[in-house]
Each structure stands twice: as C-alpha cells, then as structure tokens.
Length: 274
Ligand code: ATP
Image (cartoon, rainbow, N blue to C red):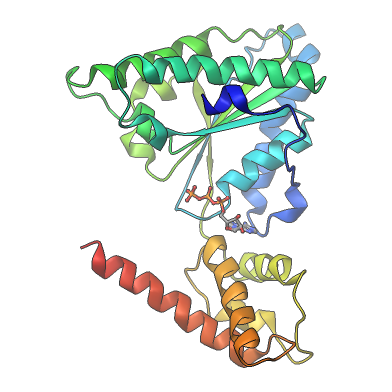
C-alpha cells in the first residue's frame, strides 16, 4: 500500500561523490550499470539483460546510498522496499506487495519520463532466505513472485527495470535468487579502510563548524572497524558535545569523546543481544 501512495516526486537523489571510500564497489557498480545505459549495444551483441545486482556486506557500510546513487547515475526512477516488511505477512499479501512494487517502479518512470527504473530491496534475506521444506507458504509465494517478476523483465521494454538488493548474509540466500539471469552480479561492500574512513568523516563534516586544529586523519586512525554509519554517528555525537558546552565548533576532544561513546554503544548492543 505504501508503494501505491508514493507521490511521483523527484527522489532525494545523491551521487557517488556523496559516498566515502568504497572505491572498488563504486567502480564495479558503475561498470554493471553500463549494461543499463548502453542497452542498444548490449542487445546487438546478444548479451542477456542485467536484471539484478546484489550488494553484500556488514550493516551501515553504504549499500542503500550506493543504490540511490546508481539511480542518479543512470537517470532512473527509484523505488525501495525492505525484506523485513514481508516477514509477518499473511498468505498472498507479500506476493501482492512485490507485484505492486514492480508496477510502481514502471509508473514512477513514466511519470518522471525516465526510461529506466531501479527497485531497491534492502534485507533481501527477509524474502529470499533458504526455504525449509515448504513450511512457510507465504514466504514461498513472496519469493516466487519476485522470481516471476524478474524472469518477466525484458531487455527491450521501456522502462528497463533493474533490481538492486542488499544483504548482510549472502550465505543465507536461496540459490534460486543467485542463479544466472537473476542476481548474478555480486558486489562486496566492506568496512572502510583508513583512507575510506577519513573520506567518510570529511563528507559528514561538510555541514559542521570544525575547529582549526582538528585532524580527521587522526580520527580515522582511531576508528578501526567502524562502519560509515558509525562514523556519521561520531560526527553527530561530537556536535552534541559541542552544543552541551555551548561551544561553536567541534574540537578534537569532542571527537575523541564521541568515538568512545559510539564504541561503548556498540559494545552495549552486543551484550544485550546475547
Ligand atoms: P544496512 O545494511 O544496515 O541497511 P547500509 O549498508 O544500507 O546498511 P546505509 O543505509 O547506506 O547503510 O548507510 C547508513 C548511513 O550511514 C548513511 O545514511 C550515511 O549517513 C552513513 N554512511 C554509511 N556508509 C557511508 C559512506 N560510505 N559514505 C558516507 N556515509 C556513509
């Protein structure tokens, strides 16, 4: 129902330049997107259309951002859903929602006069995890509907439709989803390295008053293992410390406190989920 109500306005597009690090993922993704852009040449060579790209990697590393940037890069309409929406649905509802999602993608493209549409499905494992002997009928129907829709995508239709899905747990996916002609392009989206972390911090510092002595390189050094989402939190928490102190700038000290806070929060989450 949410998909049906969505108004045909320009999505809040962001570009690959707004994503820190992830150079390899960006490169692989733009290469794959070329298939969408160069449709005519692809068809002449008899190459089958690319229908699905799977982004895999830990939470908060920018998979959603990459999907949105892919839409901007290819001037596509963009619709999104999360696999988690489907988990508790009654029989038939999930399949209907999938059908609606594809319909919505085509309607949005027509309204915005785009000749391609990207459907983003986050947490695809919520729909396409391994099936266990047909115990979950609803689940099967949803997955089957997704497979049917994907198989129905034509290389020469307008708009062209591409599905980008994301998961933290690729090994849980049903083999039917990863077969050739379905999600057969896999792109790994890893935790950022030091350079990537500095890049991400810089992007999130754009709208913040930074003290003159601040070294983001140092922050990057001290945040080994942090995801992009956690780095965004560090910048935000540092700004909150500044606010509390009635300071007009973020300092290295606030950033150091913020790193501790985010690290601590992470540890507490882990303890409580045990
Ligand atoms: P999940 O698997 O939990 O859905 P995700 O990989 O899709 O996570 P995003 O939703 O893309 O992660 O990222 C969450 C937020 O973290 C973004 O809105 C952004 O603020 C920040 N972020 C994550 N990765 C990056 C990045 N590479 N560059 C800049 N910001 C990032």
